[in-house]
Structures are given as structure tokens and as C-alpha cells.
Image 1 (cartoon, rainbow, N blue to C red):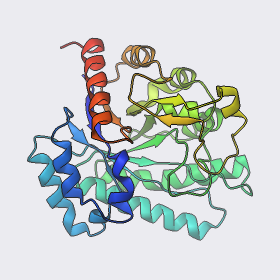
Image 2 (image 1 turned 90 degrees about the vertical axis):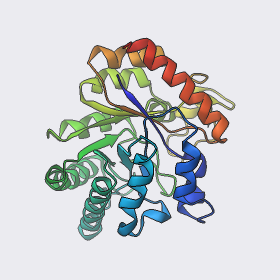
Image 3 (image 1 turned 120 degrees about the vertical axis):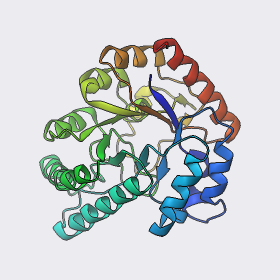
Image 4 (image 1 turned 180 degrees about the vertical axis):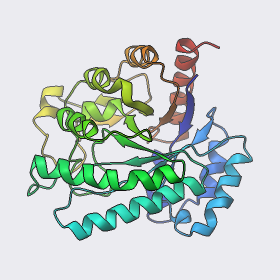
Length: 294
């Protein structure tokens, strides 16, 4: 049966920018959630001193939970090779962070969709950089998970491999036992594409999942497609309680179960606070029990 984790989407700036929430406080808040683990983000201020990693791992483990995965955002598509080298070294540091927290899965991305970088160059830069990280991860028992991402909240440009065809070509260039996909259906909607079509294409390589949902604040999906070059977050789509938006979770879980998926599902929602997050946890817990009965 898949296990549930939670990510503090509502509190990222508090944890990463102004420090108005401590990581200990988030761990304490999360105790009210019916989840098996917590997904951490590499930008948490309290994680910048590696001497703190064992302490936070123990705090979570004392709740009977674990930290299965680390969310981070390497930027491998810069045309400067020295910049890419620094990003590889940074990803290796985040791999160490994952291991230090007791996790098994560390996110990778392609990088930003810079206007001056061609498709072929971007694919080559991203694939080469990820391939450089894989042996380092393997030595530490870490699996790298490439997400079909939209845009890191602290980036300028959207994800290079945001579109389905680019994403699928990138994963097709990388073959390793400790590499797979972190599937996020909502990010496919943000790309103006069909999340079920993407899942059908990559389902055999999905290792983990980000669960969230989106609803149209105004306009149509066609309006969203016309905004593909936007450099900020599309204002047409908003986060909401999982199960009440555009994603068909029955269809998603049917597809995942068909390939024997048994990985972590991390909730990346609840932007309006703990009540919304609680409702999303309840929805997903019930769905998991329905599709993967004990």
C-alpha cells in the first residue's frame, strides 16, 4: 500500500525566507495529520547547518514517522558549464542532506527554460548533469526522482522540461536503477496538457508522486495554453482541496495500481492552511484504502 507524506506548502516562505516558522514548529503541527512521513525542502533555513540534520530526523522519528524524500531544485540548463558544475555539486550536497535525514528519494529537475537555450542543448545539459549525480546518489542509497515540474517558486523562468514531449525525451536519455519519475498531475494541467496522457507514457517509471489539485479561478484550459510563456505562476489556476479540482484521482490511481505502484504520495497542497491540508489527507487516505485494500 502506498504511504502518505505531507509537504508544508502553506508555510514555505515562513520556513525558507523570513524564518517566522521554525522547522520544529512545522513538525509539531504535522502531528495532527494522518500521514506516514514528511517531505522536506532543501531551502528550509533550519537545514542549512548540517549538524541539525540528525536532530530533525529524530524529531520526526519520535512521532513514528520518517522523512522519505527531499524536494530541491537544481538548475541544470544554464549555458555556462561552470554554473552547471556548481549545480551538480549542489545536488550532491542535497543528496547528502537526504541521506542525513534518513530519506531515500531526492528530487532533480531539468532547470529553467531560458530563452537562449535550444531544446537540444537543454536536453543535453540536463541529462549530462543528472548522469553525473547518479553514481554519487547510488553510493548513498538514494534514488533521484525527476519531476514533471512547472516552476520553482524562487525561479524566474518555468521548467525547461515542463512540456510532456520534452520531459519524456529527457527521461528516455537516462537509464539507471536509482532513477525514476516523481509524477505530479497538477503540473501537467499547468502546462495545458492532460495528466492522464503523461501518466500513461511514464507510468512504468513512476517511483513517487506529488498529490495536489487545481481549479480554474476564471477562464478556460485553452486560455491557460495561451499563457505557456508566462514567467510567473499562471493566475488562472489555484490550489484547492485535493479531490475537488480538475484531477481525476480514480483514473490516476487505477493507472498507478495497474503497474504495481507502491511508493510514497506526498501532499503538496494546503496553501490556505492546516484545515485544507487535513481535508486533502482525509481524501487521499480514503482513496488509498479503496484502491489498495489491506
